[in-house]
Image (tube, rainbow, N blue to C red; front, top):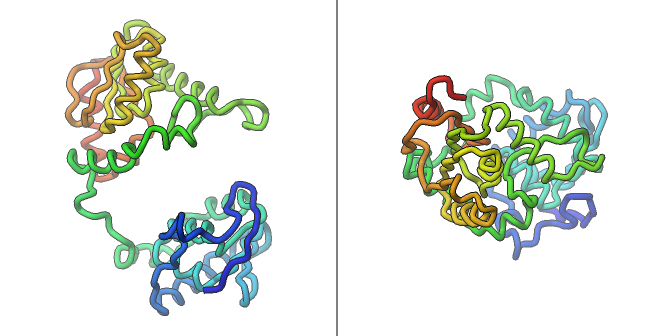
Length: 301
């Protein structure tokens, strides 16, 4: 592996990954020569017809022209991509093995063509080499508790370091571009209010929220006069959400429970669940939607 030269990219790493800070990123994963060679061939085939320029150190450029993707250490880059796919692609950037002067432009091109980067026949062979989800991490009731705790019970202080003041962990709705003065917290409130409007949440609404987060949606629903039951599997999130609700004087309107969606009881006028689809997992989508249906009162939303 060659050593990438330090560089400064707005929003990106300024040097190769620090082994003390990111040991898993600093170490290039072991990859057989055959896997690396196949990955190299697939990557070049995928990039050659895209509107970008992919420059591989020591072996020329492919692509139709456009934003530059500068691969400074092809061997390490292909080893990571061949071993871990998109995760490897991201970690290769963290490790300083590739760069892009216009990072947004390059990633936009790749995202727009994501479905066709790998030929369909090879996509069907993915199961032969892609890591499988460990059986114990399936989103069964017990598995979900373990998965959520591992992710969200790290520390509320940790999440507060990179979330906005609302502590919202999902996409916001901006009015125009953020650079035009629309602050993230305001855009988060716009997103939440739009969801509550669509669910017609108002005075007296019995609302079930599946996935509390840190309580912002429950707070805004209760401020409208709704009676909110909010479910989470994270003890840290539950405790902070309760503190925030109590501080707002809304604890008589909101109950935050440590409860799996499959164990929910009662009947509600509306159910709101923000970005839970990916946490539930495709295997359990039928169970999830059946649970939502069972909790809704006739005419519920």
